[in-house]
Image (cartoon, rainbow, N blue to C red; front, side, top):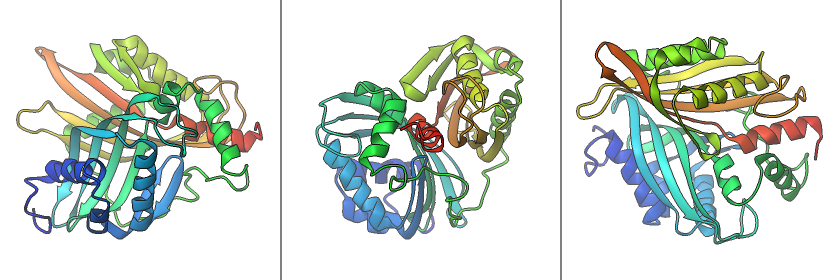
Length: 329
């Protein structure tokens, strides 16, 4: 790969390799090389820039979760080394809450949760990132309800005025990556499916998902078949029925020895004005950043279906926006 360290065989090897080197081999100093000086990192709960902030956040996380592992399940990517490449990296993380930190006093809780991260890299360095951690799964395993945890977090950060503000279109900086993915048919099919669902066409689920679909959703929720898929997407859309749905990025891939895969980054932006996943409507303006990945296949000849579905958004960041707007603290 032109511009990248030759020890990496390909882009997935680079993404999985630097993740292991940074987090599990404690290569914090390598962040000066693997993250650009002015890297932009967007998480649903915060926005930061600069690799010094990345280094500080990495050390703080490992102080709180010193035995954390990051198991790379897949890297779905697009682009070229010359123009820059965008990876959608799916991680399964294990950790024990052994130190005090963002998640409060150490509880000793053993955790397992997923992360989806879109990273743009060029010349051996990441310069733009969108990262979603399943904080709903994390806090539930610590004994919290995500809404109660968000309320406690606001208080610990100094109250409504002083607390760290979640990501919104208003505080989302423009980074160096302005691409929208590739034109592979699997990415387009995935984007079209999500658009149908967000346009309230729930018939798309039984027509496009395999009857035995495995789904992995926020809060560590795992489901089988159509019913959990319907409940998840309807619950989200019902909470924000008039919110604007936007596809920001889509990738499809056909790789040897792998099923067809796709990755889509999307958002919902609008009012919390319906009963659904997030309780009674409050009228709060909310921005939901989501990333979805899918695997496709043809179990029955001539019937290509979505067979595995991973979608994440940060429930804690959504509740934080609702609580800040409604004053329910």
